[in-house]
Image (cartoon, rainbow, N blue to C red):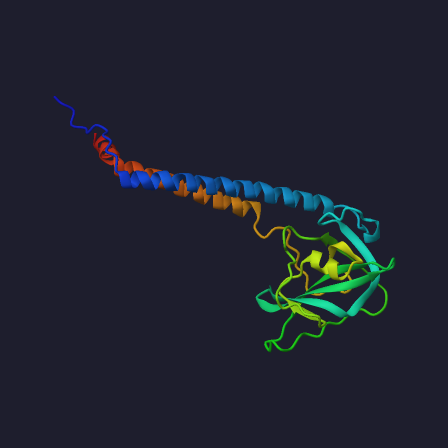
Amino acid sequence: MTNGRPSLRWSLDWKSALVMIVMLPVLISLGNWQLRRADEKAAILAAANALREKPPVSVLSVNDFPNYLPVWAEGEFDTERYWLLDNRIFQGRFGYEIIALLRLADGRDILVDRGWIAGDRDRSKLPEVAFPQGTVRVHGELYRGVGKQYSLGEEASGEWPRRQQWLELEDAVAEFPSLLPSILRLDERSPAALRVQRIVVNVTPQKHTGYAVQWFAMAFVLSIIFFLRNSNIAAVVRGRSQD
């Protein structure tokens, strides 16, 4: 008696083979890239948390200005010259991020990110920003960004206060040579702090890992479809299940 089960046969479809050749390496590469990004974000978080555990030091004693180093600074705010970084959203509301100048005791200045303030629906009206009077001690962490986190927008002008999309630290130093090469981001409990929400990474390592799993899953599904289209493996499986 002959066995009626079908044997596995292969018939290559060049269209599906072309899709497989093009798409499979892309999907795997995207998955690996997301895993690398997850490792990078985990390293950034670990470094930031390690620095944040240190006690605050005077900004005047810092030499290398690493991101996330806790510092304190004492000086007087320039109440006339400051930046309003436009289109900043906080808890679903439109507003501005306030970057101010703080004159230190040794005559140098530092940019201070005071946080968020609500904007007016009438775009012609700028919000009134209150400043502490006299000498004040503020505390927070250093941050100069990665790449161009604070890059100058096209709206910059000679008038103060300046509303613009971005503020690049290097351009601010060119205008104010006495500036320290970093930005002091105020802690929410610091004097002069507005609404503060500090995010170390915009996408967590766990999300990057989740994205990687999705890309690898798509690669797996693509492989299954390719084998189903180019072979009779489905018939073979059905025949064995019937036996």
